[in-house]
Length: 159
Image (cartoon, rainbow, N blue to C red; front, side):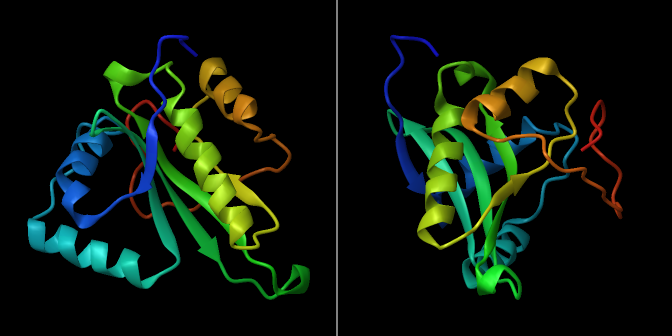
């Protein structure tokens, strides 16, 4: 992490952030199809109805990093929920400055506040740097993940 990096302001995304979020998500997959604003609004409404938080890091009012935390109700572990993190991305111009770490740490803290007993994330990346990044935030490769896909993974990714 760079020593001259400003501390980001961490906040939950609001509808007004949608254009910046869409631009950031394009960096995950440039071929991601654009939705109409009506479709984005419908998806946002569903997110708002569920226990989902889109955690953002802002620097000088610019959205530079985000991840999504889903808190899942649970019938085991004494009824304690668990968290799942998805859609982790930092703008290419702002990487390696600690912003991704900041949103992940904030999302994990939110999960603990909600009483989660664990927080999980999956990555399709095999990049040692990406795996070291997640380890450096505190995640450990302790389980084996499986998935069935309805849509193909992003190019150059097992995601």
